[in-house]
Image (tube, rainbow, N blue to C red):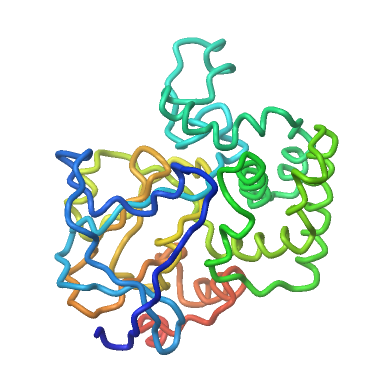
Length: 323
């Protein structure tokens, strides 16, 4: 038994049919032979004494080791990247001409096929009002709810998909804004001719509950520059990104707790598929932690963002020593 840990019961995610988004982790990858699964990731999900659920090392992990990979359960490009990245995997697109750029939202036939879990449903509705509202209000999370709703209607997911994730505490002001977003989403489906039966799950309470979980579990996807090998060579590597290309929700990566001086790093090389690697040597039983924010900020800035954005006061060793 690991210290500060009691074993967690098996996690089940139910879907009506196979969903390529729900491949949570692929073993820890053998990059020279990516199609072949290696041994299981050297981690165990359990509970901490003070931070709730967490992830722990099940054996010693060496600095720079790739711990595991993860695919999202839901992702969506940022509005500024809609025509420059793959609509499924968020990989940056290369176009031969302007006509191709305006007509091809996918990087490959595989992504086009995998996207059918939501895209055929999405194409039936006019999303311009929601996109414009998100642009003017500076919102990104309603886009993830839109995609999840389309997956549910398509039968590729269930309304309970996010229930396993920790929700954020919402103020009355936040809830009022979410109610406006909900009405816009529901009316978009209704205007597109979806029946009451098809969107029966789409209640105001469901929308608020999903947003509460997205709010603290969403990852901002920034694609790293340089090769995968170059990044892994440095245990202290940070992601040098051109810009965020979208947002995504994962299951296993969402279980990692925060530390302003983390021992593991999450990064994205070419697509939304995440890689988690060790920043230093980690002993068996040690909790694995990532940094939710820009770790280069000073103490007060970090505390303010973590409090306002994630709802907690950080008491990691770095914060307790006030840098």
